Length: 284
Image 1: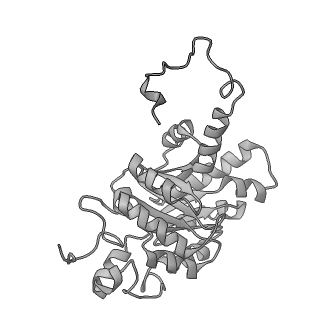
Image 2 (image 1 turned 90 degrees about the vertical axis):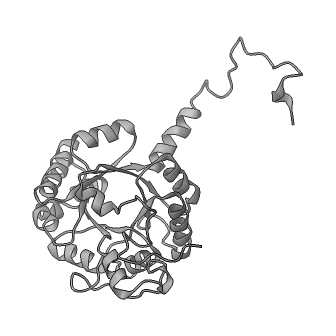
Image 3 (image 1 turned 45 degrees about the vertical axis):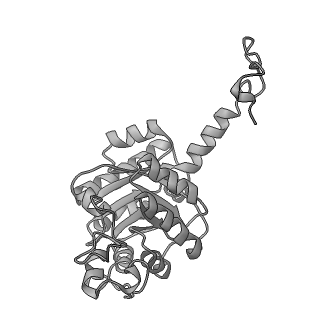
């Protein structure tokens, strides 16, 4: 059996040969595609990996935040060679720490309203001097104590920090938020943004989203966009999104609704007839 590899880790835990960290791939200009899921979704995590997606996002803000269950999902993802980002709740550095110790490739921080919030988000993900994350190598991310402190710190630098802009105040502060050292990507939450603005017309929300996206690009940060389907993904691509994230709740609901459309379940084609008795489809 091959022993543990030595040298800096590509990310935590060690990725399979040939697989590069998300941060490195973004820096190279790749466009990455992911699926937004809620716990429990181990099978969907595996299916996303088998299908060839680049990452999944486990939503622990609007879904359960059970870290024991999360570890099962991270293990399933590792088996299929797909990275996992976790969306934590607002100002939850302790949960961010646990997610990273379990092997998450990065953290999505909601409700980042100004540069101070952005600095706090970065601090929760990184070790000193960039951050204040608690240090341990005996976690799953540290391969259960089999890596050196230097290797573990080197690997941790690949953790992705995504900040969410979800208020009018945050849109105004977007240039300073995006320019914060350690921020890798910006995700605008249009639903929260619309609520914060009193549910104005779509044009108003779109203009605020465009302002935040422009600030992200000007600062050299990736833009993440949540989309409902393939058409939405194409629109996000045209707008310059580098992280395209499919909302699987909507994808699945739309699929189920299409299957349940009247006329697709109960009507039988006039030409249809039962297969002959010797047809293999009658086999038990």
